[in-house]
Length: 403
Image (tube, rainbow, N blue to C red):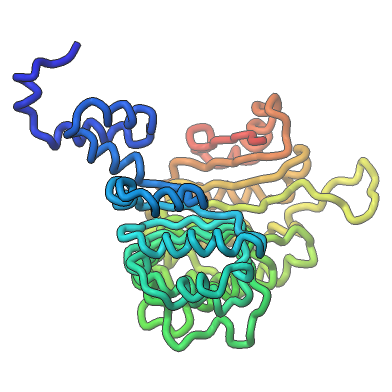
């Protein structure tokens, strides 16, 4: 039942805005709300056109329609573009990039699946040295499956965004790494504002060296996500972490070392990481705990897996033993598992002792892959039994079986 106009006319417009804001994630509802009355239309447009995927036909429409230019373009804050993986797409990619640089209020860019080498030269010039408000307004740069001719070009491109707060690289690669590719006379201009860094399936060393080399001030990173660290990269993690001790709140790490041969170097590198300095740390997530091993040579079915004393994860307990028992409230482990005996690659008794010292810890979550969903109770029982010396295991332990 609708309210009488005598009542609605006396309501502050801000109340309608708050009502419409509640439906920001539903384009269907927002579309219907935009038809209610003229006064609701601007607020609905703000949410309807907040995010856009830039396809050639859509860009042509926005550029050719004066009505769209006035009513759609000013509301765009987040864009996605991708698929520029062929030289035949140069003209299309040029039109999209040139339109993107004209956006006045852009805050987020997600670029996916394209090669910089196939961009038209005017497009690369626009991204590396051309004008555009987006280079001042952008807050999130999200690159996924992007190939650059060199790390220097990637560094130059990212450095154009003065106000960047979140940097996300997922499968970002480059063809050439010069001897000084990670070096720069000046740190990136966004460094003092960067609070989120996520690197997935990338070469971590050049990126971390670039972000920490010669910086007059420390990046105030609150969330650091490095889920795929090679053994040869482990030595750069400690120094980088030591540069963000005053800000780090959420840490995700994963070491791609599943062989005993990697253990000594990895143990030494991780041994230099002192998490006791990170007094603001609230959550830790450990990736790449692949307990399910593929043996290099056939073994007897009765041969047990190697114990925790020779495990590639022998570093795990010492790593957590150096955590300051202050604000840490959640620890998450991402585990690949094929059977109960494989759990013995981790020293659970020692881990239980470490967990007992973390008095503010509320959740220890194990996300297990490789087991059937109907094994949920069994897996939780296996792990719970191994953590029986941790007094709060029944209260805080969570075991989730994922596909």
